Structure formats: structure tokens, C-alpha cells
Length: 298
Picture 1: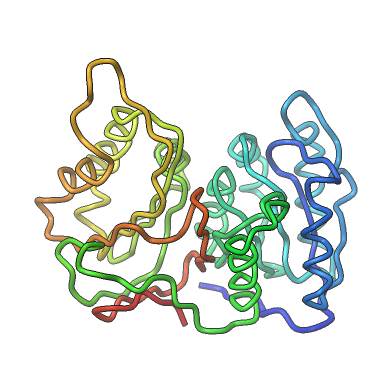
Picture 2 (picture 1 turned 135 degrees about the vertical axis):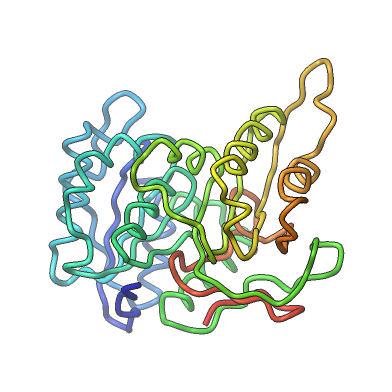
């Protein structure tokens, strides 16, 4: 796995919008914070474009991704927000070699589709908070971004202090971390860049889904062999779930346990990453370790 150079004081970062459109007032607070980290901030040429719900046409969004990749001074690229729009870009982006000029690509939610592409090419990237979220201005959001800053500087990252209530089949494990938003991971099953999860750790998070939707997606991963292959399962925030008038009868935790119970795979729940208030940065494609009490990345 290719690890991009970690950021140093005075480096340049870029802001792009590969999915939903963004407006300047959505990211002004983040730019101030980024400058306080002594990073120079560049906006992609088409950052504020808009076509319906998207940040401009597919061609404009691909143009901005290519601009960020080929810009010699840019060391990290932040997707400003999620929404929907990254997956339709993959057909064009898969012909681009992102390892020729390695840099950090940061985002989560819909950006999961891009993480799969980067990791398929052997490039590590970061599942973490996006500029749009910094406008919340609360202490937890600030903590998320400060943790992201340390991660981008190459500092050891403690992801979660695990309690017995957080785990199932707990034992020490270590492996390459893949995954992201469950809905996007599920959608990627049909793509030829879906990975082999043998000896890897899978991370999943989601929001605003019906329980039976969650069950459908988790069962699909089971049928693909993911839970049989992997060394560990990390479940992040699963929030704002819905039920039908006739209850589905299982929580998200019970859905995961039911699907994975036959494989004796360690599972850690309540990992503070995803759409919940806490969104700790994860280095995708890099080694993740659980040592009996701490989940961390070097």
C-alpha cells in the first residue's frame, strides 16, 4: 500500500466537491481552521458549480479531481461534503493512475466510492470529517478535525478505547482496514473494484435507513463471503434508523451479530466514526490493530 507523504507546516491542501453542490458559506469556517494549521488552501476551479443537486456536471467534477491530482503543490485533497455523486464518476476515474502523484484524499459517506478506487490502486486515503461539517462549531466537531490534523501529520491514532459492552468474540487482531458507508459498500458489490476481504478488517457505518434495508445489505456482504474472509468487523455510528408499522424485529447490532455469528470473527461496535457527532479519522488501506483494549493505527 502506498502511503502519501504526511503534511508539514506550510503545505498546500485543496478543496473539491465530487458529490453534492457546496456554497462558500458552508466551508468558510473550515478554511479559517485549515489556515490555523498553517496550511495553504486552494479551491478547485469549479468548486461552486451546480447542476441540480450536484456540484456541477460529471465532467466538471472529474476535471477538478484531475486538477487536484496533477497540481504539484497540493499534498492533501478534501471533499467538501457528501450527498450523492461520486459513484457515477468511477467509470472515468478508474482509467486515471492516482498513485503517480500520491497525496491524501479525505472524506466519508458518499466519498466511500472514491476510497474503494484509491485502495484498489494501492493508495491509502482517509475516511474522515469534511469541511462542510466544520460549520457546526461545537467542541466535538473541533476535536474531530484536530484529530484529523494529527492523523495527516502521521501521528499515532487512537480510534477507540474498547469496553466489553462494545465487543463480540473480542480478541487481538490486526489487518488492513477497508470499508466506509454501508450503503455505498453495498452498491460497490456490483463494481469490479470491490476488494477481496481476506485477512482484512471491514469498517461499516450508515444513517437514515430502514432496518430491513440494513439487513439486506449486511446479508449481501455475508453472501459475498466478506464476514468469512475478514479478520475483524468494526461498526461505526448507525443512527436515525427507521422501522415499518410492523416492526422488523432486530436492531442494527442484532442484524450484524446474526449475519456474522457462524464465523467467530471479532466485532467491535460503537466505533466513533461516521455520521454521528464523533467522526475520528481512519487511514483506509493501512494497518489497524486491536490489542485487547485499544483500537488504533500507527
